[in-house]
Length: 97
Image (cartoon, rainbow, N blue to C red):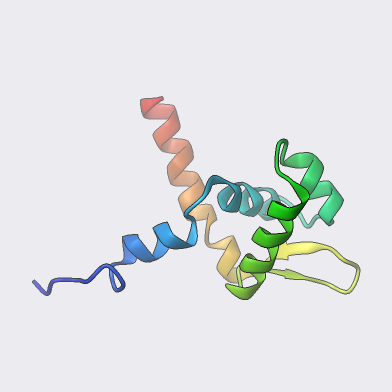
């Protein structure tokens, strides 16, 4: 079996992408419907305006989300794929927490 370096390991790649809880929570919100910035800010209790701005910018750069002409943020097909992880997290929570 070929050894993987941290940069080629699929677990590492996903962990780096989702390295903080806000990223996953933003994607969770947007996977359940497009939202404007202020709607996201209200839905994500405790997030600062600066943090939300930085996270949205990073997610757009990573092609996980996009912003349409009406100012709505929404997930791309790549961002929708996070539902696989979301579902696994829900099953883990139900079984172990």
